[in-house]
Each structure stands twice: as structure tokens, then as C-alpha cells.
Length: 338
Image 1 (cartoon, one colour):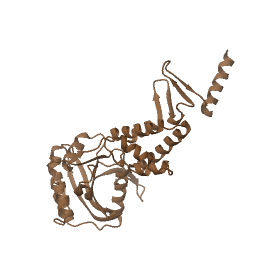
Image 2: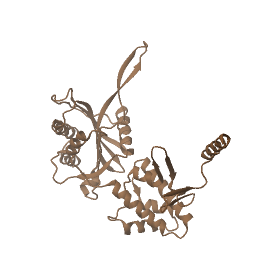
Image 3: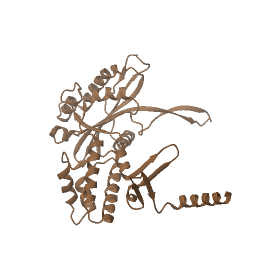
Image 4: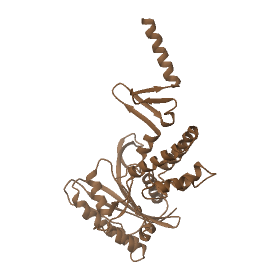
């Protein structure tokens, strides 16, 4: 990966309802040293986030971002000019948002496997305390790459070649739907993928494939391999590659699962962006009420743990050693009282 362009501009509204002020730089940053480290930290945080949305530029959007990005890629505009003009669009878009803010906007272009990717990050400072050399407590501001207000990435070649409707990725802020709406409109984002729906379909296919296996032990091992791969991909922010997964779980017939999946997908695709929460629910069953909490791995279900739907009972065999010790101890105490 190579950082090719980078610049940081500023934008703020000191108090709610006040005029917005923008502060634009007149030259690009040197793409090495601290700025390269800052970009890489934000890029990795963005990549790992489970809150990303995937989509494309809408056909009827009013945003200037797509046109400016195209002009830059085609050499009709400089990176500096593109970002300065986008800052003007951002200032105009934020007029619809009344709260105060003080942000730095980082623009970057990097090269991943000879494919250009264009990023925009909204960066807030976080306040903290430190004790200086005179043992005095003072406030300091720092940036936290794990707290992203807004992030944007477009895979330029995929977009211009029209080879996908998922070339645009955005990440919004938790708990601020009004700002998220403004930033989606600013960027021209249109949702092109429902991760929950795609994950549900994928997991259903996984179950159908397991049900077709003649041996239950083999099916359990297969489910475990699939989930291990999926969770590892999710941990690094990568999609599930169906062909790669198919090879990993059965090297003797490396295309068997991929062909099975393709025949059952509503829209056949090699890459699946999974929903983290749905994956975890598949891996574990859990539930709780005021007096009871139960959680167990899905591979125990049907063997060590059996559910009787007619009587609404759950039978647990081979209980954990620590739980057994507690139960035996309590049973002894109860016997002594009797």
C-alpha cells in the first residue's frame, strides 16, 4: 500500500447556529512521517469497524464529490483543487446541521494493488488530562482513530469501470443520525447492500450445505471451519471470499461449496460483507431474563444440549466443571439444613 496524496483542512462552528468557518491549506502534506501514520491508523480503524455501509453514488444526487473525484482521476484537476472545492460543498451541506463542531478533514489517496482509493475522514479532537513537568494538571487535545465521526472511501477503478455497486463505503457516527444524514447527502452515498440480509442468506446456505452431509460430526466440523474463517475475516474488516472459503474447508473438492452457494444466492457474488452481530448469534445461542442467563456455543446444540419444543425444556449434559462444583456445594449445604 502506498499513500500518494494527503491534505488536512479545518471546519468549525464555534456555537450552535453561528456561521461556519473553514480553513483550507494551500499545499499538500508530505506523504510520510506523522501524517502517513495518522492516515494508516484511521484507515485501519475504518476497515475494522462493523458499522460500515456499502453502496454507490446515486444517479440523482446533487453532491459535487463524484464529479470532482472523476476530474482528479482523469488529470483535469489537482488533488489540492479537488479537496478545496469539496470543502466548499461540505460547508454548504453543514448549514443544515445546527450543532456546534470543530473538525479536521483529512483527504487522502492511496494505492492498493495498483488500484486507487480516495478517502475522507472527519477527525475530532478528544480532551484529556496530563501532569506536566511542574506537576501541574492541564488539559490536552489528542486524536483518537477509534472514534470516527465520518469516514468515506471510494474504490475509483471499480466505480469508473462500473464493475460493482459496492465501490463506495461510508462510516457514520453512533448516536448522531442528523449529522449522518447530512454527510450521506454530502458524499452522494446510496445504499447498495443490506449486510444483515446478505449474512442471513449466506448462513442459510451454510446450514443447507451442512444438512446435506451424511455424517453429523463432519457437519459440526464444517460449521466450525466456516465460522472460524468468517470471524477472522470480520476481525480484519475483510469480506468473506466464497471461493477462498470453499478451498479452505475442502481441499479435495475445492469448488464444491462455492458452486453450491452460487446456485442458491439471490444475486451470485464472490464476496460477502457479513454483519458481525448476526455472525455472533450464529456462533452462540444466548438469552436472559431477570433470574436466568444462558449462553452456549452452537456446536453443543443437539448433542450436549437438547431442546424439547413440546415441553419447552432445555436439557444440558456435561456441564462445565466450575458450575458443577457450585451446584454440588449448594446441594450439600441444603442437605445439612435438612
